[in-house]
Length: 310
Image (cartoon, rainbow, N blue to C red; front, top):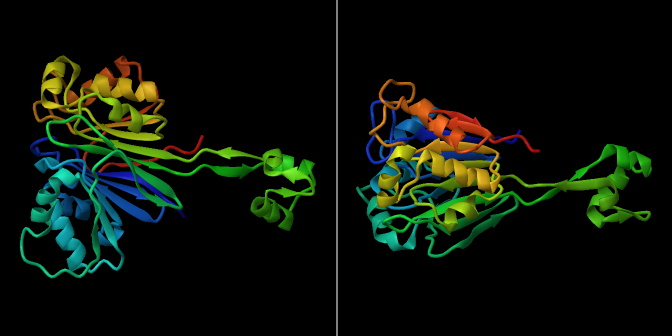
């Protein structure tokens, strides 16, 4: 049975807190696991979340600030220690290759796994698989940063009532799917387009063209909302988004499920009490921005299934 879900390993920006680990996000997409932005402590969070090194097929790093990449050393060594039997591909900004190399070889260990380095240097397609297309788009941050998007190819949904009306059943249906027509009946006559699902991952950035391009039509958008709206000046100065900015971008892009994460330590823990009561306040400001779809204010070890197909 195919599983498509987000496993949140960490939600803290810059520094971890008592209840938030540095960033880390695993996307389970059918039989593959894609790990995004493994910050410090990701290996331990994987253990707590029931995620094994064998679950990882790909690692995508948006940029080389420590809260998004310091966990690479431990994760890579764990992949080798556990002798993961399949290739693991790692994407990261080409401009930060020296940082990747330092993290990959931070200490001595025995390499046992085919780890493929596939750095990103421009917008475009990184890989095409039968179940998804992986794209990258440049973001706006003090260091070079890229967001990522998975696009599932569109498929076809056969319509039983139309098949019956045209007298098609059994082997004729398979033949129709292979050949495009049977006895003058075409696929368009008895089926409809099944839109492929889309997942977008946007971390440290100001609002920019890349944010909007990645978010467009996403079934799930995982996006940083480091600051609340009253601190928008700080967000702009440091290359980040507020809850309201992230929600408006999601609204304009037609996002179905918005996941807010990457919270500044200046705010209380979700559910805590302070001048902001941060968890509820992030949600309130996102709703005030007009976003009416599914909304999740992420916390560590949360699992969020992708929305069911329309």
